[in-house]
View 1 (cartoon, rainbow, N blue to C red):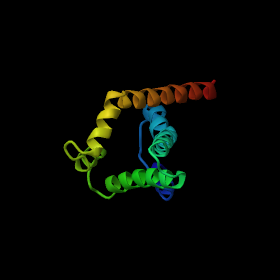
View 2 (view 1 turned 90 degrees about the vertical axis):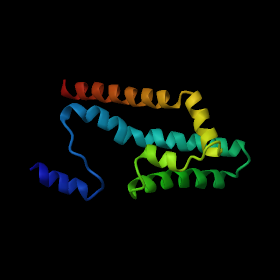
View 3 (view 1 turned 45 degrees about the vertical axis):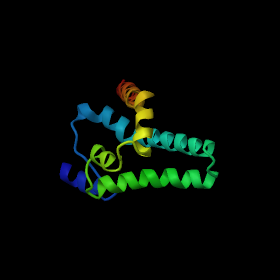
Length: 130
């Protein structure tokens, strides 16, 4: 039965078989993560506008950056960390931007978002089972 379900779901996109104990985290990363990525794109667009880009250019460039990153990882260029390292030249623009994100607590903010979504998924699961 599991093989049939995985094959059916796989027709719609990538599928991973996970233990039930991982479902709340999987919901947070895989489903709520779409919203997190879109929030990042919105922030990139707003920053682009503040730097003088037109709304259309800011939106297209933010979308292109996200699509390009996903395509690079999916296309076998490496893990997200490896691709990030490949596109970051010493003392270049990407390095400057990444340092600003690090200093601003970007990774911790993302971790808090995923933790909050995981906790909420668990709450909703408990409420549905009650």
